[in-house]
Length: 110
Length: 117
Image (cartoon, rainbow over all chains, first blue to last red):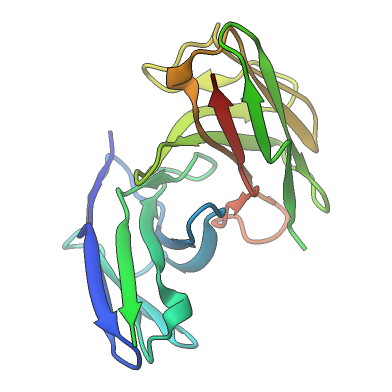
């Protein structure tokens, strides 16, 4: 089976940088994804890493180390609207469903 | 592109009744759709994988006779919660992949909030 660990809560102030870590255990590995979910809303795709290294998309970056079964999401220049839950997710093989971590609630204050 | 819709967005039903939730891929074909359930302040838990034209695959612990899934076309999957009970009250979210574009991304519907009284 699969399991993912991420911190339950993170707090930060506007303009700061936050890193949300994710460690995973999976029988197979087909990439690490990150999703954002605001209260009452649907998850929205942020980033995907299939290979080791850093992927940058605007203020968000994601990193993967397959040898360590570890990844992180880096959020820069935090804004109030970034307050949400962030989930890491893995897929054990192509074509199967994403399995999500328990989520990290990010609270950004002014 | 890659929009997934769900209907209804909210539903309240009485205990013992059945509720059907529809999930549609609006601008792409989805041979596979996924159904998740999310309780407040918790993660998305995969319930089942819905394959067009064949039986759904249910995750361990999910009762297939209670949560009926039908995937009759490449753009529509339905989840029917039968004999609903208050403990079935949850946020149900469907998801689909567009195999013609980015195969790694799953597109999520807006979710259906079910309340059983």
